[in-house]
Image (cartoon, rainbow, N blue to C red):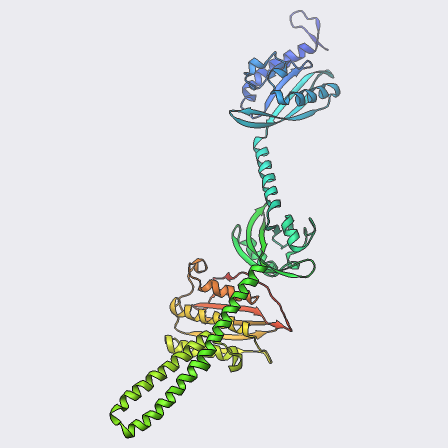
Length: 485
């Protein structure tokens, strides 16, 4: 109840709750042109839930058509119970309340948050205001995120979100199981403790973070909780969260595949080595014997049958050419022989062969530590990498000179091939050719990596670094190749 003075009679007049609502409705109607464009729907009802004002229409009614109607007449049937429960609680306690509602509009479901507030006049509760705000987009976004989360949770691949400092933020169950940890046990751990490159060196994580939203294929040696190692391969992608750089790592355990690939390549290498030795020690020796016999025969012919001596000498030359071809084939199939000088002699031979065959001056230097003996697998793969790099320098780089350098530092061996050609074109790693990819693959087998750098003042520098054997245990890591301009 409120007391007011009539301007006409000058007498005091007492207003009831209905009068206060009428004045509120009239004031709200005057504000309707301002309220209508707003996304929120504002409704005023009295204590009997009869509508006195609506900022705009809903439920098939216009704003004016809603006035005088009970809220149940325009509320969707499936939300009436929720809505009436919230309104009655607000009327009973005078405290604000709320409910979530949804309604189908033009065949699409729309979602709303409805906040209910008590209306008072002189501390007397005279009605309620309903403020409905649409949250359809938020609901869709939340459902999309929940769907994506379920998809990630059910993926067979391991998924982890890692910040720019290399610290694990989120993982899925497959990632936890892959590394042998329980749910959420990896959160807050550094990837340094789980794997080698690219997650083993913080500087490379920072380089990737600076690269923005790019992605790259990665392969690395990973370590389980119990200390066992396995080969992991996948994709590392950069993205932003709240203005900070993060990386999404999606990996698979490819240990069996790597073992199979390694076994196949080793089998091919063994077969090449066998054929090369057979050519050198079998056919090559037999042809050498034929050449000696022809030389002896030529001595007799020179005395007894001089007219046919030129033919004998011609046959001898053909046999000698066949011997050289056989030796070249043998060197190509088994270029590194640990019993005949190992990798150093093989690379010296490669430099001499390149100088003679291509006419490009090629030199080989080395600085190997004392008692550093490279095993056959390591030596063969390094030779093949050098061979492909020299071939590319001549054919594609138009090099005028090439330098090969081999050295060992601590527990690593480093092979560098530098030329002064036109340089490596952009996108070379994405080309259809297999040469560069096979070089990278060979390096990964050795637990190392290959980098392609711009040489100064011009040309390309190919560098392969990989670990030596330590005792009987190979320190292996399987990184992806990187290209630096």
